[in-house]
Length: 464
Image 1 (cartoon, rainbow, N blue to C red):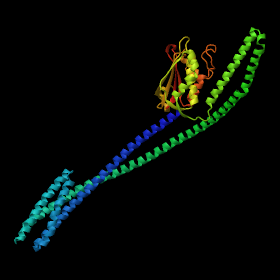
Image 2 (spheres, rainbow, N blue to C red):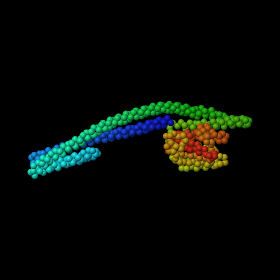
Image 3 (cartoon, rainbow, N blue to C red):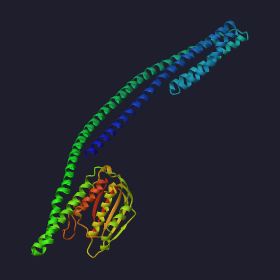
């Protein structure tokens, strides 16, 4: 839960941070686009002013060509005039395009074009008179000067408006550049702050994990120590405890053989109980050693195990018991899993023999083995990270005496029995051993009581 909350906090912080960075990036981009737009506006104003100056310069060139020709009547002086008229057409087209977003300037340019047209007509008139040998019409020169003065006035007015517009647009550009710089600085500062926060969170999480790992290593050390003690206990149980037990059984059997007839009924009963207790003690020690060996496998070598083969071998092992109880065992096709074959054999053997042992009197045991794949979310109390895992679910369904659902966990406790030994034989270690085997295979075993005490179901989940 702590790890989940920590990860949730980190992901939430990342989400908020990325959202803020995205918003600031959008703002910075918007400001940059605005700054570019303002820069383009300023450049546009400069282009209008330059074209305006080009108009005046070109008209001056045209007039220079006119004057040179009128004074000399030589065609070579008309070249500036002709070049100027050709250039003027392109300049005026460019000016039309530049001022099309400004109605006031469009009107002014139209007036300039009208004045230019009148001025060019008068220039052409005097040039034609000079070519034909007529004197210059001074009235037309005066009228031409008037139109040229009008052109200069209109161009000056146009330039004045553009200068005012340039001042306004330059201010907007300056503000846009300042705003852009501010948002870029803010974006950098926030990015740096988020990096520092993330490094801090990662540092805290790393320290927590190091502390957790240290605690885990200490627990593993304790576990290794406990396992060593358990192995020592198993050694004592297999040697030191069994030796006195074998002597007890040997002397009690010798006493029964040599002096059994001399004992009264009470003595015979006591001797029988001694033998029975010794046999039970032997079973308990043997089962405890089996459980110990299962729980303390130092090397778990997994291999492919065909559970259909395991099932057949268990049926052969229990053939006599199955025949005596007239039991029927039905199994679906089972999968091949990664595991230890001898342990899976023990698992099937214990579950099937239990189902036969705890059958109802005078009711032939019926055991069904069902198989399907399942997700981890079906397993109660499983960890969040395992819920999406896929498992082999093998269900052992019987029609026996069943059990009370409140004991669904208790029955897996070692030496735990729900019935008296006089009713059903056993040491109470079989289901504990089953859980240990399933745990060794990174799986789960769940006990389920069927309705109306119609038997029980044991679901075994093994990883795919």
